[in-house]
Each structure stands twice: as structure tokens, then as C-alpha cells.
Amino acid sequence: MTPDHEAIIALCQRMGQAHHDRDAGAIAACYSADAVVYSLAPPLAERGVNQDTIAAWLATWEGAIQIDAQDTELSVAGDLAYTLAHSIKREGIRKIS
Image (cartoon, rainbow, N blue to C red; front, side, top):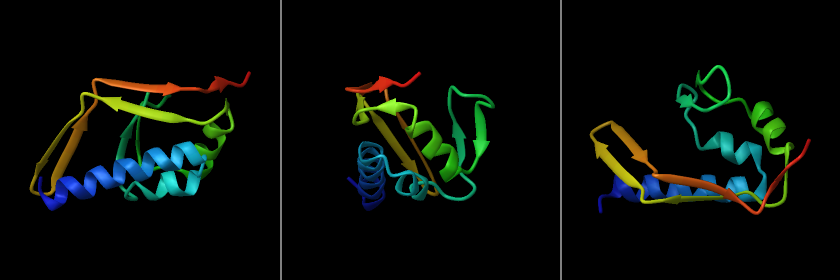
């Protein structure tokens, strides 16, 4: 495993812990200012993240947020890295109406 792989894995672990801790600032800190982020919420793709938007999303869930990515593949080539998770689950939480 290369140092780049280790750094990306550590970043993913920090992001998982930040979700568990409901820390919008720590979640936002995991992204660069110009990151392209894809999600299921419109507009589907955005550049960068907004800490207030993350905090608002966190407020819609009750309970600890656990992100469990299984069967992940991490590829690093020069300045480009991506990860693919075959299954992402959020368990132990309930959506607040």
C-alpha cells in the first residue's frame, strides 16, 4: 500500500467519524474547496461543499450515523484518486419528519 492509499483511507475514516459525531465542520474539512461532489439530492453535482447544508442534512436524522462501505476499491494514479463502494449503508438512524 502506498502513502497516498494510506492517506485516502485515513481521510475516509475521518469522514466516517465526523458523520458519526454529527460534526458538519469536520465533514466539510474532508473536501477541497473545488471538489466535485455527486449526490442523490438535486442538483446531483456540485462544486465544493457547504457546511450549513451539511448541518441541515444532519439535523434531519435521529441517532448515530454509521457509514459502512463494503467491497471498496481504491485507485490512485498520480494526482487522481477515486474509490468505489459497492454498498454504502447508514444504519441505526431514523429520518425525522
